Length: 120
Image: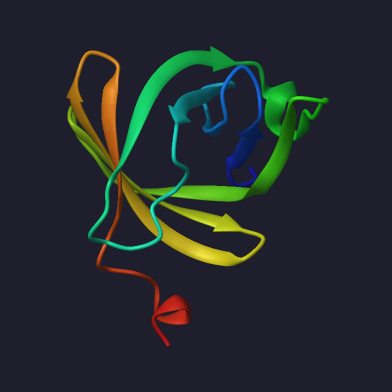
């Protein structure tokens, strides 16, 4: 069985934002991330859970949406409030945590612990 895929879509309409989609249980679990993935550990980003998408969205592009990054992802830990995972994308590997803060609201956090490849 191959590793589950992810895609980061860059949306330009109706308002600019990104969508993080993680393949799981035959669908793409999806979060709208208005300001994109966090670049450092001090600045978390809002992530809003949205409806799951079909797997064919993993490489979908149109005039309003392009693929900003794609690859595979792996889960490190999970409980009711928190999912810790790594994205293995075009630019390398980064480890994140999605932290549920209530309702559809999540925080996307770049973890301090990164793989040795990216800590250099």
